[in-house]
Image (cartoon, rainbow, N blue to C red):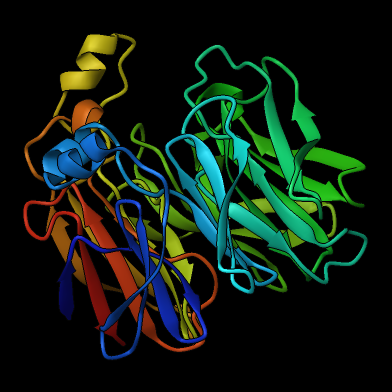
Length: 356
């Protein structure tokens, strides 16, 4: 295991890791050498504040979701969606998020029957009143258009959208509470959108991996015990089966050559008080121990293994963020694992590398 200070991983491009330090985006090669790609626009004050990992957590400074799509990189940064054109070496602002800091994940649709190729995202923002939530698609012009809208009183927000080439569909994973916790199926280029399962925390998830028989996913809740589960799809019969109990909320995951990798997060108790939500540093009922694990699922035999664990620091969740371990997006064709720690007692805001 190797640690690199203050680098956040985003995705793999031609065997290089695309990563960032605040607004600066780099290639990191196999020798762990950095090469600057571009710098996103930021203020002098943000540059100063980012030097403190605690202030950067408090103010949520840094790049969030990102993806590679058709010779372009895309990044969410400070409520803006940036693109970087690899041919032109040009950075542009393409979209301003109407609420929040942008999506948890972007989704690349390519070669899926009955769908247009394209880049999409679902809105993610604090939405206790369950206002409308949109799904956007990027047009060839670089403009982002709404392709589907969840009307008011249906969901809080969208965690992710998974591409399923076994069933020629997309799966929407939505949260968070009551009947907003739900799994939706999209068919025929968004002409058909069906709510499949809803109303229980076992249907609250941020990552889904399609197989011939169904979906592997992890639950994401601070309210009840979490697990990695299998959504078995047998014609019109769909059931959710527990595969493996996990320590906490399963917010982040990634795919390697031979493994699915999940991390567990520590989240606070649910409270209707804004003040309590900001200053609380006690984990919710669904968090067994106040630590984050990295859990491997072997694709061949479905065996599970925890390869590393990191204790949560004592800082309050609402102000300084959850205890999490994040991964690059997309598929890694080797068994190289990059991870980013946040909210941990040791190696907070550092990049980890495992050669599995």
